[in-house]
Amino acid sequence: MAAGLDVVFVGINPSVFSVERGHYFARASNRFWPCISRSVLTARARAALAVKTLGPQHDRALLDYGIGFTDVVKRATPKASDLSSAELAAGVAHLIAKIERYRPRIACFHGVTGYRAVHNALAGKSVDVALGLQAARLGTTRLFLVPNPSGANAHFSRDDQTRWYDALAACLEKLKT
Image 1 (cartoon, rainbow, N blue to C red):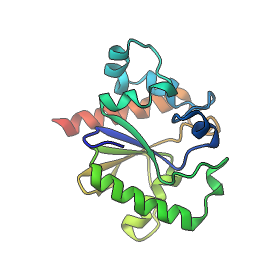
Image 2 (cartoon, helix red, strand yellow):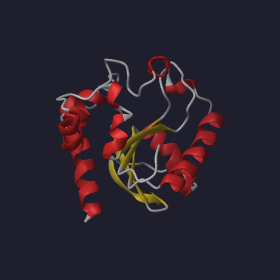
Image 3 (cartoon, rainbow, N blue to C red):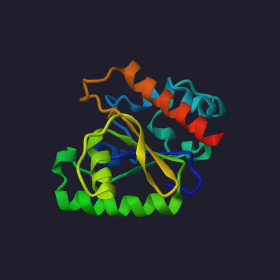
Image 4 (tube, rainbow, N blue to C red):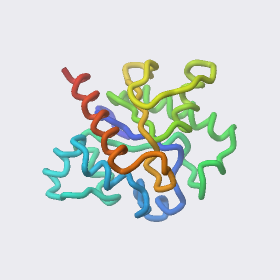
């Protein structure tokens, strides 16, 4: 994460596969890169990088276009369910401090699981959450929730995922004006 970002994408924790390759969303079955590449959110970056489709190798380059990445917990696991509740709680505290320090315009959470842990820490209670812009904030940072782009998430199609990234882009534009 870097200061001054428009959006930081927040995952639960990295996969072992992604850590081995040194890039976010490195597994080919993950829908993040194909869907974000079809979204208006990355149009400027794709044009500047002269690519139609972004891939894991572009994760660091996106910092130059206001897009960054982080996780609630940095330890790689085969499955997010391998994280202990204590590990998740410690990760939430670290993430909150990091977001308050770097102050991106929007922290966009991939999936309800990671966001719910942060929301519960902020609100002190568990509540149902919905996709989209959240009422809660971290300092000046707005919070946004999109579906998890994992290939295992059969509840949302690639088109649905892309529409959520477009909604994020529209929200970001409103915040800039």
